Image (cartoon, rainbow, N blue to C red):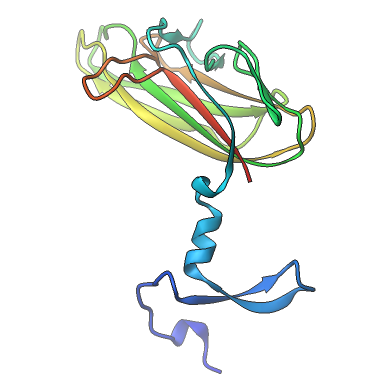
Length: 200
């Protein structure tokens, strides 16, 4: 049999087959379609267990100081079967398992820039108050006296939860003009932060 690298490449189709190991059938070698593999990562096939947003017309979420992690909040407290949301943004899991977590933030300038420059905001997830995964950076170039510049950002993680694990999200800024902000739009109002949690 020739080396795999010697085979020609082609654009995959959903009905094409891949070879893999079936962990639920005594590690038997089986075929899987590309479509079936892709559907495993589609959150529409997962069970939505919590969704919450900050209030539409709330004040911007701002940091107390530069380079200081500040917790992101998602609206009022909520108690669901698998996860509880606290007013301060803590998510406490009551059911062990694997979860797909989608954080949507509207980040940008919350006050006018005094100098034309690149301004940054950083995001981290925390599991039981310990950093979980890598930081994500979002930067904007602002001209002098520019305000109300925001952009949506989606942060997606797979979270392995044990009972009583706490997940939280924090942001930090290079300059206090950056933060999370509600934005009104003719196409639909955007909250400063939204969270969706799916049980896999």
